[in-house]
Amino acid sequence: MDSTADPKGKRPLYQEDGLAYARAAAAAASATAAAAPDEEEAKPKPKPSSSSEEAKPEPEAEDQAEMPPLVLVAEDGVEVSISRRAARMSHMLRLLMEDSCADGPIPAPNVHSDILDLVVQYCEKHGPYYDPEASERARNPFPPFPVELTPTVSSIKPVTYVDPDPHGLKDWDKDFISLDNSTLFEVILAANYLNIEDLLDLGTTTVADMMRGKKPEEIREIFEIENDYTPEQEAELRKENAWAFED
Amino acid sequence: MKSPQTQNLRAPASHKPQTLSASPAAGNGEETATAAAESHVTSDLISGLPDDILGAIISILPTKDGGRTQALSRRWRHLWRSAPLNLTVCSQSFIFPNFILPSAVSKIIAEHPGPARRFFFLGFRDLYSELESWFHSRALANLQELTIRCFKPPASSHLLLPTLLRSASTLLSVTISHINFPDQITPSMRFPLLKQLSLLSLSISGGVFHDLISGCHALESLFVSEVRAEDCLRVSSTTLRSIGLEGKYYGKTELVIEDAPRLERLLLPPRDGCRTIRIMRAPKLEVLGPFSRDFSKIQVFKVPTAKIQHSHTQIIYVLMFIFSLSGTEPS
Image 1: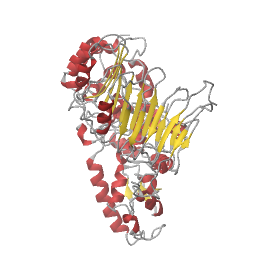
Image 2: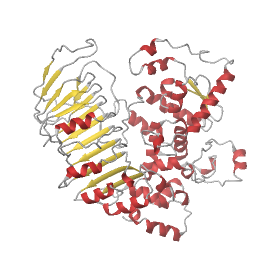
Image 3: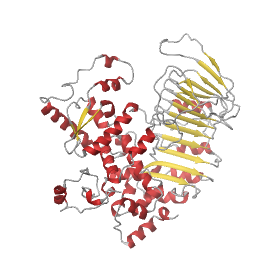
């Protein structure tokens, strides 16, 4: 996958097939489920047309909050609902919502319901503050600006302290992502499938943090990686890449 | 650490990306029994992740750590070369042991098929001819993140800078220190994708600064520290959301926010001494500061202008802040 696939260039991970599959499956599912009564309203009411006339940049976010939540179906058949506001964090779900393919159950065939619950929890927590257009991801925090923007007020507010994390999301993320390894990897895979960039970043940086500064022997132990190099092969590898192994 | 026997383990990864069926819950024993015919049970879950996810993880690691992943197992051998390169270089090894020394850079960029995603460089001695030769190679042609902090200014930096910025069309984030800007902006110094710009301890003319900022149509965040300009620093940007300004020793240059319709934050360090900032037009400005409690003077002028078009939603004002801090700790 070439890096131009993702304009931000961060990671070319999004699988195009996943979206097409989800669209087709969602369309098929909603066609068959059309007759079945829903626990939510039978049909989302047509949105008031005033929303399209508004000049404000994000009327869509407010509309979404009024529409019924999406229903994701995990691989074990369990349904997990996610509010539309939270679902915006998933690029895949966002596209489905824009194409109005999100009314019926949406399959997440590779994701177990426990994992899906975790992912939805993350999205519900971050959803209210999510701005798809902002890209201030503190991956390399320099300068250390606050990532979150305070809600709009109409006057300048001189401050004596600028809180770098006004909603406590960093601490929450730290607790959230302290999972055992296998759950962590499942969450990463689910975030990849649903294309939730922030959660994928969180997962991959967490794994990278576990690997940083460690020798290969130590990393193998943490992740139970089996060393299938012969001693000669490993010695040659270390010699070829001496810059990586010298201290 | 999880215990192997309760996990429903997936097939070991082949060396190409695949979607893996994730079944962590115990209970599908029969499925894995049949699948186990073609796979062997392993507790090495991380190696089961697809190549591109592992590549993304490797691409976050400092260069030495990234290179060392090749030695983890044969499955990992090729990943470092196929992941986007994160080149982290420091000329003093004791500061960042996982960074590589400048002497290793040529070999790595010659052998790594590229592309290089990030170049992060801290130089404590004169390495400018090396920098120039590295940046003439194809490997560093499409960077997304560039940080060059040289703590020994070069002799003729205005010639160096255009070379260092040749990835302009792909750069998302740039941090430069101690390398002065040329007097004229070069045509290649257009940054269509740049979101974050930090300029530290350098000099730049007001005109070049203004053109540089205005020419970035995606810029969201600007950080300026100890920057000298003989005239004032003027900012006009339709996209800029946040500005940080620092200038304790040099860089007391006046800052003028000429036109910043999306600017929301103007951040200043608490003990900055005397500074003049003029805000001509920043209708969305919300956060200004932080200030020490002991600032002595703020003057605010609100000037009605005949050009107000939407008087109920836009306030156009001219503000002059002059504050001198008495140096006690802000609470």
